Structure formats: C-alpha cells, structure tokens
Length: 127
Image (tube, rainbow, N blue to C red):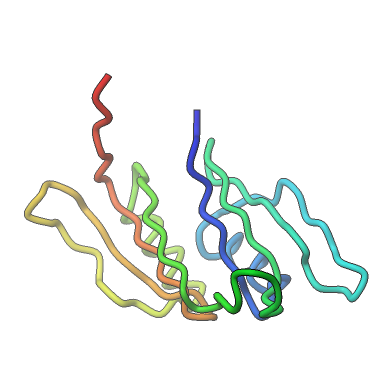
C-alpha cells in the first residue's frame, strides 16, 4: 500500500494532466476544478501508485513551487517508457542507461521543469 504521495504544482495544471497521460501513461482519478477554472486538486495513477497535482497560485503557507518537483518512479520497462516520453517531447536530462547499482534509468523534465526519473531500481524495505 502506497504511503508517500508526491504533490506537484503547475502553472498550467490542465496541460500537465494531458502531458503526463501522453508521456508516461498516467490515468486521471480525480480532477477538482476551482471556481476560477484552475485545477485545485488532481490525482493521477500509474499502475497502483498515485501522484497529486494542482495549479500553482503562489498563495498559502508554502509559496510558489512550480518547477521544483523531483520524482523517482520504479517501472518494469524503462525502455518502452523512455520511447513514449521522448516521443511526447520530454526534455531528456539523463539518457536511458544501465547504472553501476544495477538499475536501468532515465530522467526527463516535464514541460514546466519538474524532474521525473524512471528506472528499475526498487529500494528494499526491511520487514
């Protein structure tokens, strides 16, 4: 069961929802539109895991956070996802490669600068 939920902010959250679906295969679970037409809160699923996102407005206790996200996602087939993401125009930060710690990874920026890393590395959680 997932207990950590990345939460990202976007200047254009509606465009981010569409791009995350196209580039990585995320599926929307919930999209709550604010009265001004921005996205107050959205949840997207990739497999069994969820990421939350919403429109950046710079208000509140936390201030501005667009372009500051960094997420790592463990996947079974990074090669196919790399092709999908680059086909959708993802800006490659680190090309698909085999690492010295036994993973096959890549990293890309989304259209607003958040960093997404995908790979086969899965941290082991002691029982």
